[in-house]
Image 1 (cartoon, rainbow, N blue to C red):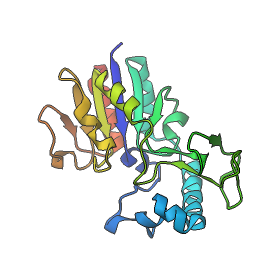
Image 2: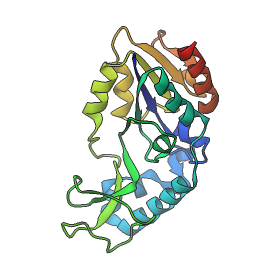
Image 3: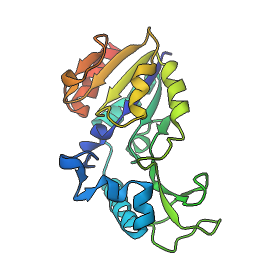
Image 4: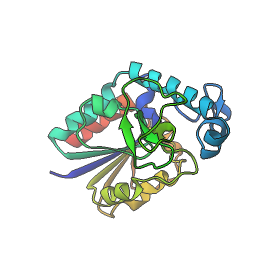
Length: 227
């Protein structure tokens, strides 16, 4: 089977009701990214950061996988599929996808604020001040904040270089270093881009562009890849 690598962003989860991160004026539901998604924000006001992610976590738990998620799972019948996602929700996993690599962490997990290698499955939908890791430090969301290293990036680059088919779905390609993945594909790799603004991206002419929402776009992709 050919190796199909799918790189997903917020657009694939938006139709499940999860709001995209980059909204008008760089705000997400009334919060500035700088105030809730940076190491500096954590140092200044950890309680506000925890509250923000507790709300996001509850939103993600209420959301359900959509047609795009399920069709990506179905492609496993024809390809060896790996999904590299910028999303911190677990909708790909809940749709049944077998191989999912999270670049920016997983909201349903907590990590030590002292050592990021200590990661825990959450038993509740909240982290509060006073929840400690085994090292005795405050637990924080298991997410990669702006300004932090992306631990799984090298793995993602290797997977991308091995892809026979590489698909980008619902990402602005503005969040680095993840946005550079598309430039790591081999010369022989088939490239697809699914996004409502796909025609506006300044990318290679070799990319097949599908200008639509994720659900409709992945349906078109599925038909192209399985015909």
